[in-house]
Image (cartoon, rainbow, N blue to C red; front, top):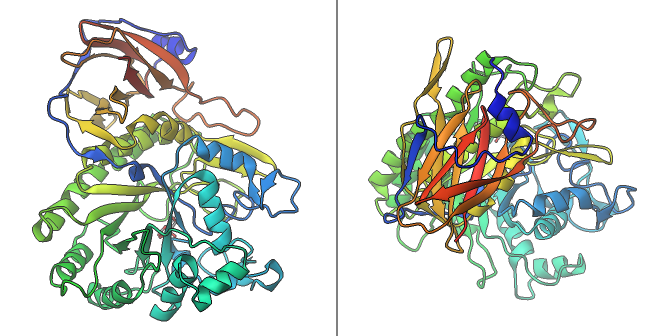
Length: 521
Ligand code: AHR
């Protein structure tokens, strides 16, 4: 890999404004043709009861020496608040279809310890249950997204859970909730009806699942009429459309009042070379970098494929496509329990996150929520912890830099992405998206995928009066750089300012970097 002098300038935080290079990539933003709103829920998260995510990563218990609020880590909450996490999905994943909510409510001493058969057969003490999850969601300011148990539960068990959480009248379960210290009903704005029902959720055929969907969709409801709830059906987990067809057709043919859904899920991990995941998280070369990023770009085709089927049954786009599991799934970190799905998180993963967020933004007319897998200590996590220590990953910083895109209006851009190739792998050299933020600013995200060459960009926004754009760049010493407890700041964004002249922002961007810039007004 070549050494990149410009990249070093940027990595040192030195602005490379007004590059105005002749060979620049011309990005034209069309603010006259705004597209769909980029729903803030596209930047959502997933916190399954898996490995060291809840126990240790989020929950340490009230008596822990690790600073906590009612048992929930203060450092993790503060870091997540800075991301404006819009929504958090819990308790799974595969675990959701084995979870029985009654094990996790009531006095701590009465909680029932069970085996987490989905993830390593470890004993789950159930001290972090419904009320603790609701507390966590509220502390980080996120909407709760509850996955109900379709695989090993019953319709009644799920309906009772919803009554416990949401009843606003003095029912038996509302009284039980109050006795547990929570008089006011919770809001449950999102409910998933099962998880991967074609696999760990019960190995159901599409027809078997849609039979369940009708029952759960009919009888499991929020009791809190002041707070609407969206129901999300299980959709596919690979580039096939069997589940999509079945769910959408069943929905289309339902009798109006009988039941409804608002979304259908899609799961798609970036796993280069097939299962089990063997791509390492650090100490890899450019070949692995290029292969993984090429693989992740398949997300675009997958969304197109699903959208075509959804459009057939739902041309008005009432049903959201909810990508409620996505991200890099790599080989487990050496020495960790393989069932805990712990992996390193490098600059490559930061680029991967940015590329996927760009794709979701382009599909914002149909994709209205996504949940990266996962939040703390699991898969492509935002945060890693080790006892009292905490480190923020490169992926964390991408989510932070993209906050201005939450609920912004998508603006079309045109540019010639060029090609980056390594060996027999060829993919786009750069990526770019633009949007108009809630407060009326134009924001752009520019990704230079090429790890060997810096990229000069000329971003033009006709009619814009700004003379400067400000933001941050996330570059790294190497494509496989990671943040560790010993060196937590190896990959960290730096502030950058760029000159805008006659409506054109000119900037040179480091190889393998992500930049987000807002134009001043
Ligand atoms: O995110 C880890 C697992 O991946 C989830 O539990 C499951 O839904 C998927 O297969």
